[in-house]
Image (tube, rainbow, N blue to C red):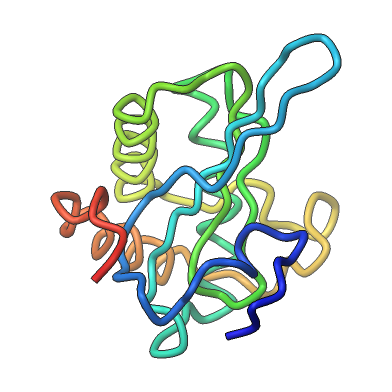
Length: 155
């Protein structure tokens, strides 16, 4: 790993030392008016050993983005990682880690009973043909099954 400090927080994280699944605070940005954005690393797959397939990841993104907002008005964004191993969850003015875990649990449980992927059509999605509700539900099920491990980040 490079000794050079990088601008992107996750590029400074030794991915060989983490143990997925986990949820960790990856950073806090403070705005000019004092608002704080808390960015969480929701790691689903072990880096460089496994990844989510795109149709399932894409559907999970749609589902989490829509359903999480039923549980909190603090959600700014839920974005997939390019490496396909997890998501970044950004919340505004919300620093209660346990509540973040509860928000994720409730959202994933909602996904398990979903009957369709929100905005899964050509008008609302840029690649509507690439979705898998069943795949998203399987990822959610597996991540929920390891809920007791979410706070353990390093091996």
